[in-house]
Image 1 (tube, one colour):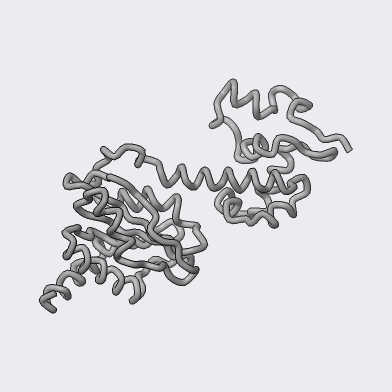
Image 2 (tube, one colour):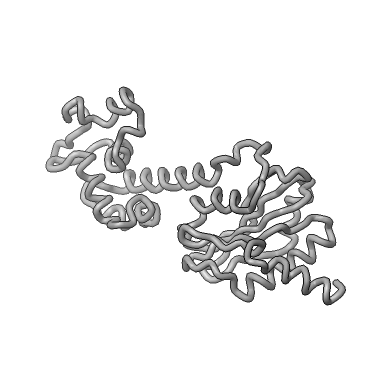
Length: 243
């Protein structure tokens, strides 16, 4: 059975040529996916297959596509093992690029924790397991580094103060911002989240590295313990216990 390739499509409809002439931004989501798929089969072009794939994603669109497992991708006729892997690799690359945007330079200065939340939401909003990240800041509140500390189960992040602060100490950070996601999408901090934050604040006080905020990221939204006043209550609690 002969496959139908991009070259057999009218020139005005070929995604490759359109990218060359007008840039990648001129393509639809389906056409961009078709560039990765490359070829179709007898009845459908790569663009047709990409449209079918997006239709399967429903209102979730590209976000739902990123969440699809390899086996789910392969249920679409025309997408086999290799194409499914290529699509997953593309989605992961997009996720990493989203998380890295605006953080390519260590000169970026943080004026509010909202900036950090906006940077991390694109990468962390749709993760299926809890991931804890730590943002390292210098004395001028410039970002030194954003790194993963732990990957937990679907219910909890596995947090140890040694892992949180070791990188901060090596990089001479003056302060840190902690961030982790809730796969459920809800951003209200749990009792464990608050207790973990208190423990890290205590350790930070001992090693001389301030914990500025703990940000919880959900489905396109976030909760800042600093903005909500929880960090203030934690500090008051510690001071009240003379720790």
